[in-house]
Length: 168
Image (cartoon, rainbow, N blue to C red; front, side, top):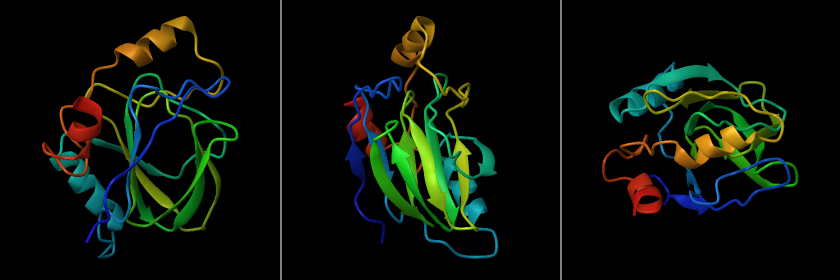
């Protein structure tokens, strides 16, 4: 059974804007890992909830954030130690089955991972993950502030944690 969703509120951290209005949502063990292609389970769940999957990869080992998309990360295989919020940010251990929902502007970076670490990434329709690794411009900050909110939670659908923590 999935554990309750956890929240992490991040303030601006030096050059990383983060998102002071929207918390990171952490879904521990959100998806049961089974079968020969566990990434497909994340892709199916995200797709069913209106978040078209965009990639299978890992998390970059440099601090970066996105200004043009909210991002969901589903850990399909392995484990990693991530830092959220920029340099000296919040360190988080993730493993297969976990999901992270990062609001636009949230810094993230891998500090290390198992050899089999694999993540499925998705964004709401019309959004994408531009890679920003330096201080945002005024136009990028404006985009972060004005980016539309997703219509539903990528894991739990129309009555999920996103509605509780982002839309209320």
